[in-house]
Image 1 (cartoon, rainbow, N blue to C red):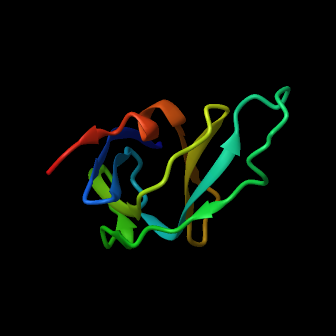
Image 2 (image 1 turned 90 degrees about the vertical axis):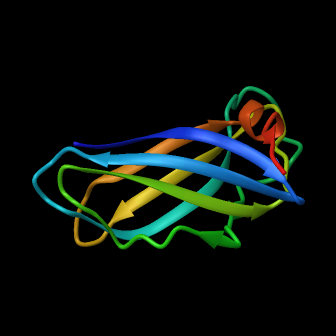
Length: 119
């Protein structure tokens, strides 16, 4: 009932901007507990020379406490500039407060490293 997708990844002013759209198709509000961005190795067969998974923290994000029932919401996250190894992706994880619904969206390194430049 709750889904999301990547709307875009942009770069400019030494920042990375990630836009996510989520939708709650259920009749129950989705109260947010946490939103986390984690780097993950995509191909476990390759030796990961970049180290362990990392949690990336946005320097700014859209304030959102609840994804209302039957509603869509765009979220913007701003990070200091970063890149990802080709064998990694950035995983967006949104957890529900007092519930078990979790939304996960993998963001490929090609979207981050090839982010559209904006002024």
